[in-house]
Image (cartoon, rainbow, N blue to C red; front, side, top):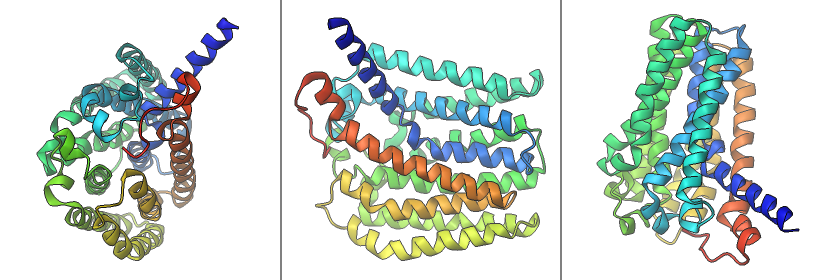
Length: 344
């Protein structure tokens, strides 16, 4: 019986490590890799190697999430006490092991995605360049817009890595893709910081959302998100890829519909982290439709399929994450009644 209990507890801690990697939240980097690949290979003739790269990017991004949690454990004890480290679900040693497993998975999958040693070497150099700001984000997020740009850089590099491994293509189209990703990533990072805008000052964090205040920060995130449509419009015209306009129009309409309600929500200091995540559900759908527009400029079917699959992963992931980690189901299974607040 004790052996069975040990196996069960081991599986629960493995699950906690999985949620610590926030794999379901790695979608923006996954989008970047997908767009970079389809920009070089619009017909997806090398879809098997593309799938290997998407797994690699997701695993690497998960490893970076774990590193940031290790570096920011003290602050997370205030802003998100249900996370595996502050809640005691994982030790620091176990977290480092999980990070190493993610890195190993990423390396193996990049090897599968590379068509030649030369392109592998270029991709490896770019990945190494991207991991540095990603791993150090917890130390620069207090720098306002510079923190947002720092986290956007590795996500943009994922698109370049994919473009290189897929064989390359028109450089002008890649630059438009990167312009879109930079704006979309900055917008997404500001929105992410808004979840903890009340708690971050208690932890000593001075994110852009804290510096501007929630309503102004949301306006900045929304404006940046709308600005990201400009490269999509240019891309649709120069390829031409007119299906992108349909996706972009739907995404913009969703955001315009959400904007007044979300602005009121962010102006309400009584809204907590969990409620603000729920408030953003429809806005997040608009983001994913907008991301699909960039893929659709090259391959409309791929844009539609990617949007459906990745949004389903996001929504399903959030639902299970909230149940198993935020609400304390894993903690209760390991040690009885949970003692941390799900409202952090």
